[in-house]
Image (cartoon, rainbow, N blue to C red; front, top):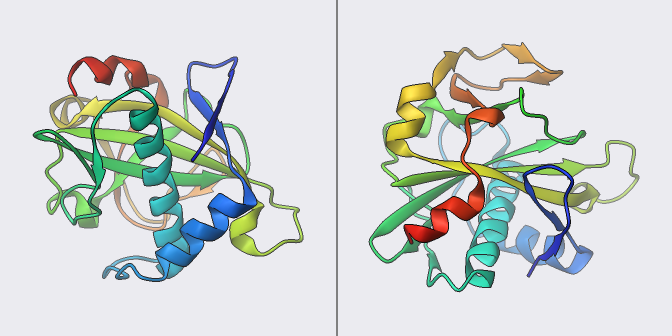
Length: 187
């Protein structure tokens, strides 16, 4: 589904095709929009695209896993539950940027691992919104226990690195994340 590209950073970088974006956009219309979601279907699309990127990467690494899109997790691999958290940006992610878990879903979710994904869109593109995304990055992962040790709270309205928080969120710095390949030994 996604093609790995060599990345000068430590993130896993993937190119996104129009066909892939259209398929995920169509699939996002069939997902329930949760209470507290500020972005509605657009939020579902962003989250689902992140899930598809992680799922595809795990499959490329011979990990047996299934996209389940449950409230408490997105992907299951054996007995391990994975929750994917995705942000869209107009810039490449940097180590001091935040990786976030909205507080309104935190208690309902009990994954073994959080994966964090960043999608880069072209803010100047004159295309259908979902087709403005060109690149996705798997930034890294943390176990839930590790996330709980490093997380800090930011309130709705907080602005950081030019990004506005639409809801209260638990955050950590991208530099706090483990390299994606490290999780392969657990799955």
